[in-house]
Structure formats: structure tokens, C-alpha cells
Length: 145
Image 1 (cartoon, helix red, strand yellow):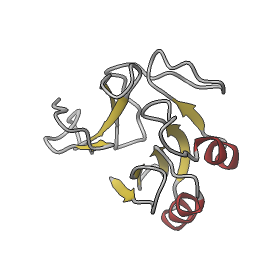
Image 2 (image 1 turned 135 degrees about the horizontal axis):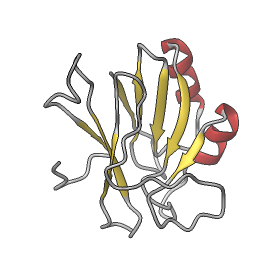
Image 3 (image 1 turned 90 degrees about the horizontal axis):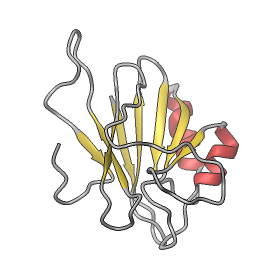
């Protein structure tokens, strides 16, 4: 499992790239406005960004979701109930997003906004649906699954 966090200098929170080095598939969670870092990282790792996940409709910071989707052809996803002014593929609580050996699971976390979500990423062991380790993007205080 490839999991990296990117910390911008201002105007947005940390973002995460979750990928599977075996399949070459990846998602980016809450991308910052300067998308070059994701393009460079995925090119170096041999990954293709398939989905951009917005954990909530961001009116509190600048996001690079539209630019990253346009550059990569990725689908933009928000939590169920998001009223976006651009095309999205809604994600449901408990939905699994298979990237190959890595399968992030969507967790509804409606605190900041009603459509807020997180992605719990766990690598799969052969013959098992998941192991006991997991990384949540973005890290949400009090989220337990």
C-alpha cells in the first residue's frame, strides 16, 4: 500500500494519496490546489489516479479537485447528499473502492458538514478481506471502525 500525506503551506488541509503499487491504481483525498505534486508522485510510482475524493464540500479552503480530475480523467466523488455544482459520483457509508490489493472503505462522518466522509485504507493479505492495520484519510478524531 502506498499512502502519502501532503501538507500545504496555507489555504487547505493535508491531502492524501492512497495507491496500490501492484495494480498501479490510486485515489487522492482532498487535493490541494497545486496538483503538480500528485502528478509527479504518481508518475514516479507508476500509478494512475482514478478518483479524486472530496471529504466534504469545501468552502473553507481551496481544493484542486477540478484541476486534478481534468488533468487525469479521474472521477470526482463526495459523500452522499453532496449538492455539488460539478459532476460527482457519490460515495456511500461502507462502500469499498478496490484499487487491487488496497481497498479503501468509505466512512460517513457527518460532523463538519452533513456529507462529510473519510476513507479507511487497509492492505489485503492473501485470502483475507483486510488486516488489522488501517489509515484514515483525512485523520478524523474519534473515528473508529
